[in-house]
Image (cartoon, rainbow, N blue to C red; front, side):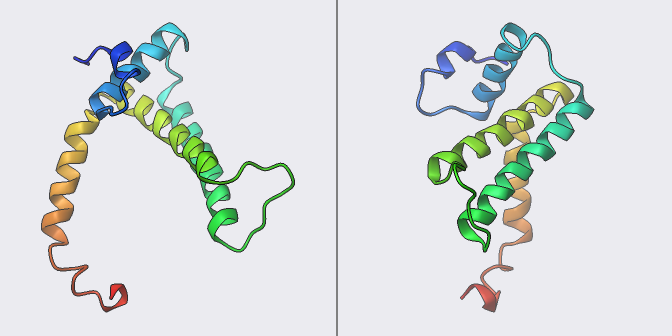
Length: 123
């Protein structure tokens, strides 16, 4: 990663490239090493499940248990957990998330140019 991760952590706005560098630096200095890709995939599923549980209680029909965290801050924490593990996997597998996301947005823009505008369910 080209960006200095320590400066990225002090900025309010952070690029995906900076986030990938920050996570890599943290793993190498605090986390000792990356978990295996398979372990991180399982951890990602666990974190997505925690986010799903919170979403189902916040916006669905389930109620919160006594003492459970809730609200935008709790959602942010769970989303950040998902993002952290996803970035770990990107780093481990050599994926440049900036480029992958750019290509994904291009694909969606071309593929869905009229799809959503013509969807009566969205109007």
